[in-house]
Amino acid sequence: MNSLTSALDGDAKELLPELEAIYKDLHRNPELSMQETRTAGIVGDFLAKEGFEVSRQVGVTGVVGVLKNGAGPTVMLRADMDALPVTEDTGLPYASTVRAKDEDGVDVGVGHACGHDMHVTWLMGAARLLSRHRDAWKGTLLAVFQPGEEVGRGAQSMIDGGMLERFPKPDIILGQHVMVGEAGTVGYRSGVILSAGDSIKVKLFGRGSHGSQPQTSIDPVIMAASTTLRLQTIVSREIAPLDSAVLTVGALQAGTKENIIPDDATLKLNIRTYDEDVRATMLSAVKRICCAECAASNAPREPEFTKLSTYPLTRNDVEATETVARSFEAQFGERAYETKPAGASEDFSVFGRNWKVPYVFWFIGGTDAQVFRKAVQAKQVNTIPNNHSPKFAPVINPTLKTGLEAMLTAASVWLCDGKQKPAG
Image 1 (cartoon, rainbow, N blue to C red):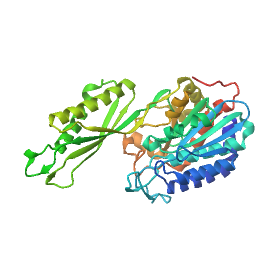
Image 2: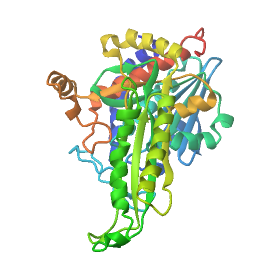
Image 3: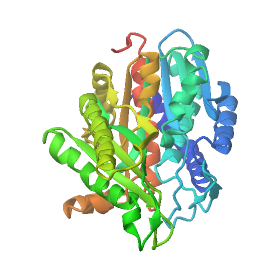
Image 4: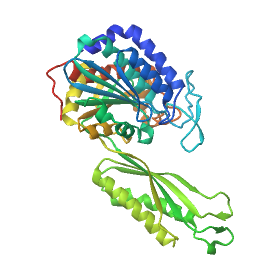
């Protein structure tokens, strides 16, 4: 146990109930991506009271707190703030009933179905402890509260808002995510831990007509259906069996009435990959197949491609991860373990890629231990509500303390040992 986690144990009786109240408030009042004004106000005011130099509206709603505490490494801790356009169905007494307008002006339910409210609470707790126990560490802390992770724009918006010029360059960037897994556990991994993600909208053009006169049409519904089926052959026939990739067509939109052949159809698809060459193959194949199916249907023009979001691979620095893993194993014992890569994607690595510094990202289990163990025994883990499910809800205890403890443990590798050199 290091000095910062010892401080957590000493302050836990007062701190954890306060953080639990903050978490419930954030959960009850979620905000959509790039609209996190209330959340940003809460964290900004909190950091200011703890003695941080606070910069607000960094990349629209982002907040950066800087705490300088003598000579030493600079450590960046990051949490994402945004919620999802998901109507919560957890039945919790602090469940969200919020509705809001999304970027297209559509009224949607809003819920923290990915756990970012827990991430914000963890970082607020770490900021409090690091501020009040400055005798235990030396260096500079950057507490970064990021908007818009769910739309893949938040990290880049903060970079575009002057992150690199306005704040000290970190020696290490650290982040974590609550996931389905036994609460109280910490999963780490060197190298790739999260996939790259690409979301694309494809508009297919036909020629509309009356349903009774199909010969006068070029049917974009048939075109879209054929394209959807053919896209599934990319993974099964163009990607090697030992490589991993997923292609999902999540939306097929066309027409308004049963007896009208529409002028166009739209596909929205998502690609997940773990290798840059595989990613390039997938993207090229998608374009080739969409264009070929349109040509086969005698479409009047080629399809229109629009990028919806792009997430780079999250590839943990090997040396830094090994150092953090040793600290986790010393702190958590058997509760720390090496995890497999997850299929989810994140824009967390955008900070490290732009600053050109090492980063480490890991997972915190948030599922009730008894529920998780029973699901493992019954081989039914996939039935547990996962991130983005309307029923996703991490158990507060011990998830709250474990995440806070993990964040402090990792930060201590750099802040509490003046001899520790930046990795990478």
